[in-house]
Length: 272
Ligand SMILES: NC(=O)c1ccc[n+]([C@@H]2O[C@H](COP(=O)([O-])OP(=O)(O)OC[C@H]3O[C@@H](n4cnc5c(N)ncnc54)[C@H](O)[C@@H]3O)[C@@H](O)[C@H]2O)c1
Image 1 (cartoon, helix red, strand yellow):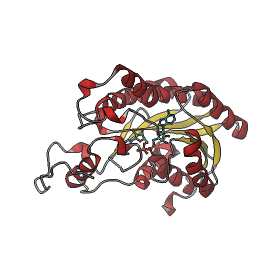
Image 2 (tube, rainbow, N blue to C red):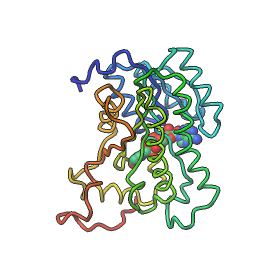
Image 3 (tube, helix red, strand yellow):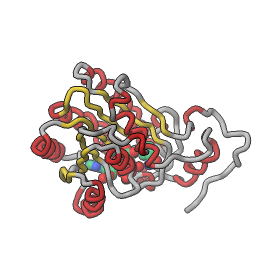
């Protein structure tokens, strides 16, 4: 992406949700760093800190702190650390979601109240909580991005309560875009196609979902974290200065098709 070099010069921001080098957030971090951004990373707990630390070193990123979004004080602490280090920031990436994997299989109907509330808290409310804190330390004209999935729009096998959460997350993007628009701050989402990450491994029959996308998407393949990163670079840079409240699909075009492709094999569920 040599043509992107310098696009993010002078811009600073935080990327929340790197767990390892397969995380979508890591694909975004690499694209932004390559384009000249100064980056801060957060981590969830000591176990992940060990994985995130060497990745941060690779990009010269600032380790902004432990953040478990169920504990709002940890979000406050991260934004205080960013303010202390940089004063103001220009972008925030929220790549955080969680649901009990026992409920990411079978019927949506069987979702428990506890897991429904926890899934919504971690995967939806946290975005609003982060945006509220970002508002206080963000330069006018900043950009905020979250990650969603097509299961928000259409029923996907096993996605269940996470689909309901992503629908609410996408609605949050639109409401936050209005709340922050008067300062020129933009709020968007990338709807990524399926990618094999730690979070995705909790979803039932995920290999089948990957294969189905590969056979039926217009581009006849799945997407990489680098491709999501490059689209994130557009949404976080001034190239997209007229774009807000948008859900941008980076899914090899899968969301445009209505049926199995005529030339696609009629596969059945694949077991690991
Ligand atoms: N992988 C896919 O197929 C796919 C497709 C579309 C959208 N997404 C979305 O992309 C985002 C990133 O997921 P990923 O696939 O890169 O997986 P990942 O496992 O690499 O990242 C998920 C991140 O969420 C964080 N997280 C979970 N609970 C948290 C909490 N309580 N507090 C703070 N952080 C918490 C984890 O620490 C981890 O860093 C998620 O929102 C996911 O729903 C993923």
